[in-house]
Amino acid sequence: MLSLRSSSGSLWIVIPSRVPLLAAAVLFLALTACSSPTARVKTAAPGGILLKGAGATLPAPLYQKWFDVHEQANPKVSVEYDAVGSGEGIRRFIGENVRPEERVDFGASDAAMTDAEIAKVAQGALLLPATATGVVLAYNLPGLPAPLRLSRKAYAGIFLSDVKSWDDPVIAASNPGVKLPRLSIVTAVRQDASGTTFAFTNHLSAISRAWHDAHGAATLVNWPGEAMRGKGNERVAALIQTSVGSVGYIGLEFARRLGLKTALLENKEGRFVPATNESVATALASAELPENLRLFVPDPAGASSYPIVTFSWVLLYRNYSDPARAQALRDLFAWGLRDGQDYAGQMGYVPLPGAVSVKALAALAPGQ
Image 1: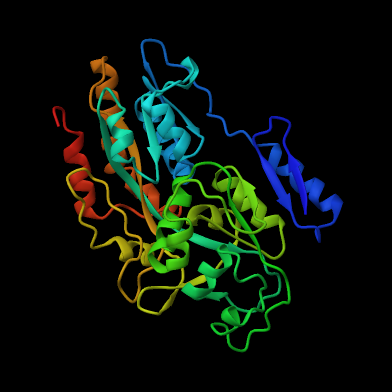
Image 2: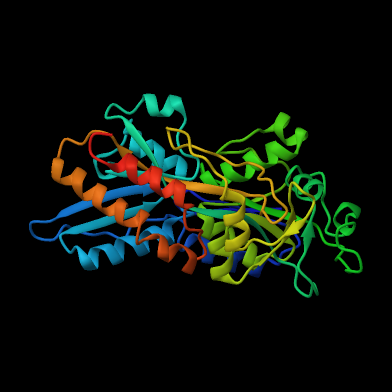
């Protein structure tokens, strides 16, 4: 194995020894060129307001679209969003030991927030479901004639490092007639605290007792075996794209944007289902949000349901010292919950179910 680290020390990449040194160097340079996700720096318009947010990478392309479109219609309100991952977004939102330049008006997380985290927020916290998507298993196996089918036993075994080769019988059993390569499996995973990781490991905990007992559901995991690690969905997607024999978990939108192949996964009913807007929407259709608007669906029922799905939350304070800033945030995300949902389907996300949108909009009302 070859380990490379960026000059900032923020990104470790573990590359299998079978990858030629030159290819490894090219991969390292490509990834570290953007290894520190930063916000699109903005300034407030004269007499206007600059809203700052940070957090999840999974919904970041959609949120940036929202902010750009909203600003065109409301030029006095600019938004700067730093896609640093759910864990870092929560840390900045809580505001403990943050530098002045890291302070935010809102956060974003695919793992919502725990009760313990919410208790640390002096201004109170509102968890606002804003969009939804599927977490896919993207793979790099050139020449495979058909979409790969992965059973629950197979993909849990891969990420437990129990299934180590693509021609393992547990994978072959779900792919009759397909000549699978005798090639080592290399997993691509998140290095940073991540809501995408939480959604994936929450699902693994629901379907695999071995995973549940060893790792559970978490935003940060000590991954078994020799995994390639990257910060953010984009970095993991890039690792998969450039590494033959790899498989990793990323948001559906990122796989589509890079044209990565994604596996059909076995769902709760024993059906192999592709990740589509329809199969993700079906998995979330019956979601009934509790009063705190925090709901996870780790193993959805239904023959047509895609098995790994997640809501993504915007984190707002319940009390802002500046009424104008509070109103600007309410207007921005009310627009996102209404008109902004039209962009979700176009970009590989899933519009919120109607009942979820209604509850989220009600929670935004002043005094709630």
